[in-house]
Image (tube, rainbow, N blue to C red; front, side, top):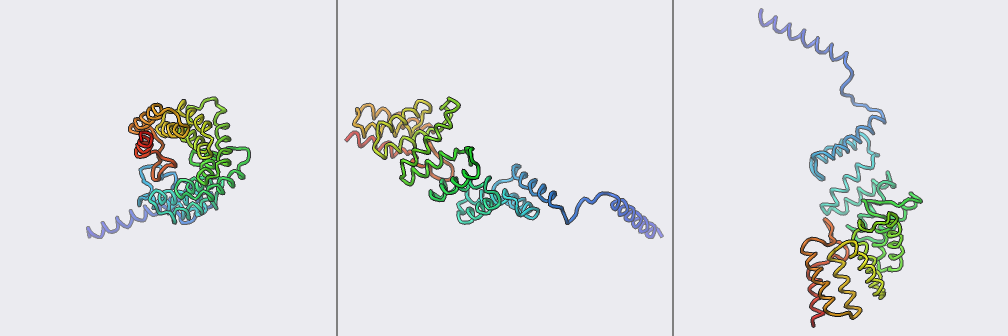
Length: 283
């Protein structure tokens, strides 16, 4: 009899719970309207800023959930591409970025150009992406991955050995960045690359002018190395050249040189470069 009472009480509690739940708003549902789906997809991607790591199972779960809610959300594919880039899965990475660009070119075409430039060394495709992004945003200087688009175009043309075109874009970059009247925040490699274009075309005095301007605003091993290299080409005093190489070596040992995570920087200076130039002077 006691067991029967307990059974009846259980049935009553279950019925009461089901009745209570039926009067509450639905907490879970299978169908969401477009606005809700886009909102939840965005929330999943924003959740990646938490304790998840790019390429981790946790990140993969959040990305896949976002994709279920809104497969047209471009940020999803950009996030998929980012982790693959950093792990060297290059073929898959560029496919993901291509998808992001197809969905939102204004947001991601410059980022893909950045990848073509720094990670793939594909200068033609980098320039194509930068040019097309520029056309999408007239009268505006874009900063994909926080880098001035004209600066990156200058690098791409420099690496193609089209030095006059590179100089055009470096000039545009400096004119824009100089509007504040302060060159101290401009990266040393901008001065270095601009100078290298003149060094490679044989305008050594102009090259030296750019390196000296960079040194004035940013003490860096690369700039002192290129200053010494240019001075040697100009047949300047050996003592001065050795002095600047020593400064370059010291700055390099302290970490004051251009470098980039995941890939080598363009014209990155190594201790072997400094020593080789020094030995060539002493001969």
